[in-house]
Amino acid sequence: MLAMSRDLKVADFIRDEVARIIQMEMRDPRVGMFVSVNDVKVSKDLSFADIYISSLQATGAEEQRELIDVLNKAAGFFRSTLAKRHSMRTTPKPRFHYDALVESGPKLEALIAHAVASNQDLDSEVNDDVSGGESDDGQT
Image 1 (cartoon, rainbow, N blue to C red):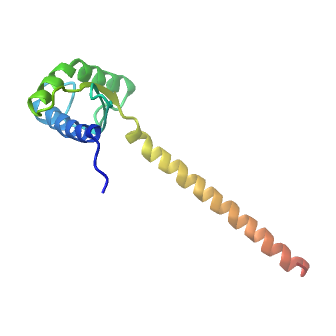
Image 2: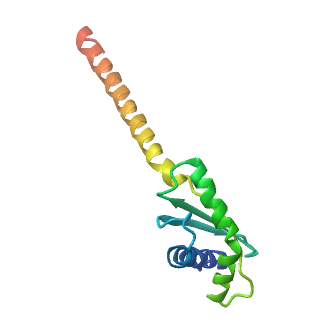
């Protein structure tokens, strides 16, 4: 089995703890209750943690920007709270980003399904033309 690298372990720890902090300890009403921490990527030197979040309440671009601004302004709070919960020498500086993939996923799935259906329709038309052409002429 491959050993997990240190940055992946730290990213998993930060993802879990930031989700707990947002859920239990954030008191800013602009953050809301339905914020998900989707992914965390930690730099190799463990100096930065890019945290990708999404929210069911932040539906518009302006609300998403405000949510990210609020979380980035609270980065010091997150960093100090994380520092109290682990024994690493340094704590990565959190940088929050809105994860639009969660919202674009269903759109992409619908586009792929439409493309597959269109391709199957074209295949069936081509097969009908090929088989239809042989039966009309009687020749191959």
